[in-house]
Every structure is written in C-alpha cells, then in structure tokens.
Length: 222
Image 1 (cartoon, rainbow, N blue to C red):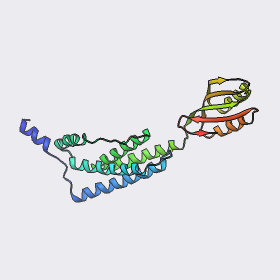
Image 2: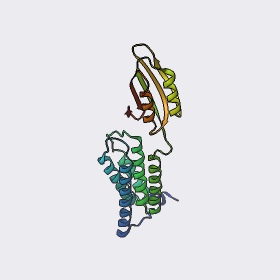
Image 3: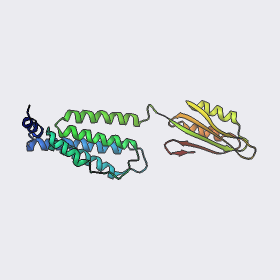
C-alpha cells in the first residue's frame, strides 16, 4: 500500500447512511436514553435530585449517537473529532460517583445505537438496570456506623452486650467514663433497618442521655 492508497483509506468511509437508517438509529437512541433517564430517577438515593443532570444524560446519549453516525468508519473524521472534543471543559463537579457510571452508560448506549447495534444498546441497558435495582434494594448490603452513647455512669458491659447482639461486627473506638459525663463510641457494622432496635434497647438503660448513630453516608439517626 503506497502513500496515496493509505491516504485514501484514512479518508474513506464504508458507512452509507440513508434517511431511514438515521431515523431508526435516532429513534432507538431516544428509547434507550429515555430508559436511562427513568432508571436514574428511580434509583437516585440522595436528597437533592438534579433533573438538569438527568437531562444531560439524555443529551449525552443522543449527541454520542449523532457523532458516531457522522464518523462512521472514517479514521480522519474520528481523529478530528477527538481534537475538537478535547477543547471542551466541564466545570460542574460530580458529587456522586454513581453519576459517572450513568454518564458512561449514556455514552456506551449512544455508541451502540448510533452504529446500529440495537441489541447491544437494549440488552446491555436492561442488564445494567436490573443490577441497579437489585443492589438498590440493599439485599446484599450492610453499613458501617458510629454509635455514640452519652450519659452519666454508663454501664459499659450492658451497652457492649446490646451492641454485640444487634451487630455483625463492632469495635470500640473511644471510651470516656466519669461520674459527671461519660461517652462511648463504637464502630459497628449492621444490616440496614436494625439500628432502630439497637437504639431503643440502649435508651432503656439507666442514665442514658444521648444515643446517636452516624453512618458514613452522612445520615444521622437517633
């Protein structure tokens, strides 16, 4: 292959898109993008749901599909597109690491639907959604908490026995015992939902003033 053949190969494209094919690709992309939008909204576990970010997922999927149809198999266009996209800078910080996964999902779905791989876009999105909903149910989760108990003349052994019965694992992080004011902090690993029973049992002990459970997700119960 001489230089002219190589240059012709780089500039050539094997993808001949008709109007019908473009419409089919975009309709498939819209369906998958809407599905991603719905899954994100249903699986969002934070306090401040961002509809703007969810709409961004829609746009990312659609734009990616359009880019793939423009590029096709043209190597020169693909290299030029990489250079063009490198000037884009995103200033919005992504607070939840799971949002990054949704962005990659949208890009992958756009790549698949834009190249006509509808089965990959559809089946892959369904499998991802099933996994998200499955683990969203907390079926396999237990969570680390900090148990903070304050009061006067705390009975350390009774508190320890209650913690032992209600947790999978526990570890004493801090202990400060005095006649006037005492405090005990445990690091505990407990199944979601069982922390309320443990709090009630500890509150029934004498001289207990405060019982707090602080999770590593930033939530406070007690």
